[in-house]
Amino acid sequence: MDCIILAGGFARRLLPLTEDTPKPLLPVGGRPILSYTMDRLKALPGLGKVHITTNRRFWHHFRDFIDTERGDLDCELFIEDAESEGQKLGSVGALDHLVRTRAMRGDCLILGGDNLFDFSLPDLVDFHRKVGASVVALHDVKSKEKASLYGIARLDDEGRLLELFEKPADPPSTLASTACYLFTGEAMRCLRTYIEEGNPPDAAGHFVAWLCKHLPVYGFIFSGLWFDIGSKECYAEADGLFWKMRGGRPKTL
Image 1 (cartoon, rainbow, N blue to C red):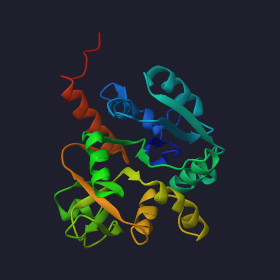
Image 2: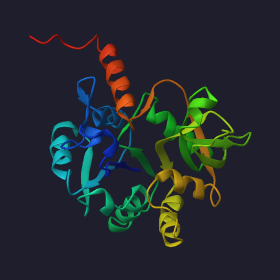
Image 3: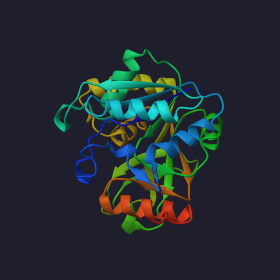
């Protein structure tokens, strides 16, 4: 099983913080956001290659990051030919391009480069093997008000994903879809069909909403810590919490 980390965006909502630094490499608690994901990948037995897909503007930042953080991971940088927002392929488009270029065939773990979470990736893999199908990690945000800000899942009694609603005014649950998916090889091959049908290529959630109508997809529900760094307010909240977990910011001399 390989892993793909999606890091091809330009994060315009976080400007000027992301003028010269890609969002996944912004510091949270004194470390790049993506460093925490790499820690969790290093604890995942049997992981194959880690592909980090990014754009031509920021590729050298990720090259330097990989050199520092890879450890024993087998990492590869995949560069989209995009210098600005209007040129990017979108999350699903980037996945499809990478999968076809590298002729990937097996199950694949897909992670958003700007997400922070504390659940166990081995637990996610075990759940995927138990259900024998694709899996999306779902975080219970506890309130309908918060749920209206995210992609929200409706599951059946066995945990199978029936529908995924994008920022619904009347959420059917409080289970928010996170940028963490484990797709079967069959699901990965569906990326091309999804694109060729003219579906939106810009967000993985759209693909999941389409996929669950064609193949089984199950929800892996977790509580605990989760941040989707999409705004300056969310970024500041995550940074403050992670510094607190580390015992506070160091005093400047």
